Each structure stands twice: as structure tokens, then as C-alpha cells.
Length: 108
Image (tube, rainbow, N blue to C red):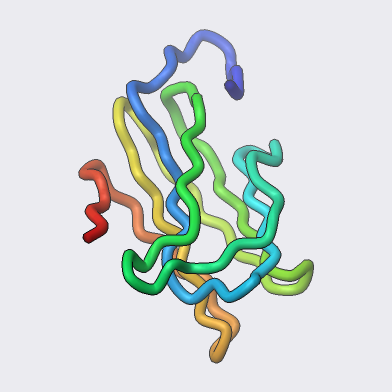
């Protein structure tokens, strides 16, 4: 858990690596603390590669993503109870996109 003083832990926080990963090396950091560093491939039936649950305190944080040591992006988010963040990667345009929401993602 990232401790930023007196903030209380959140109920649930997850990072979902979703679309367009094909044996793609990815590093994920929150507030400069590495929470994931591995190679992932999207399961094309569910459009999901990996779910990363993480204990985090309430407050404002920065999520940083690096693909193949060359493409990077970050977003700042504020969490007060439950939050889900999807990270999608488009290898054609070399773009990383974030979706931040309080409701869980559903995969069928």
C-alpha cells in the first residue's frame, strides 16, 4: 500500500490492462512505485489481458504506464472509495488510453 500520511485505504482499486496487447512488455507505476512489470497478451474473446488489484489510500495519485521501454503516458486520478482504471494500447498509433470509472468493467 502506498502510504501518504493520514489518508485511509480505499475499498477497492484495480487497474485493467484491456485491449490490443500482443506479447507486449508493460510497466505500471502508481506514484512512482512499480506495481506491475511483465509481458501481456489480450484474450480476444474477453478483450482483457490482466487485472491488477492494488491497495491504495484515498487521495490524488498518478498512474504511469510504459510500453516496451519507449511509449509512455500518465494520468492523475482522485480516489475516495472504489475505482477502476482501464489501460488500452493501440500499437498502430502508439497511443495509450485510460478509462477511469467507479463501476466495474464487465467481460463476457
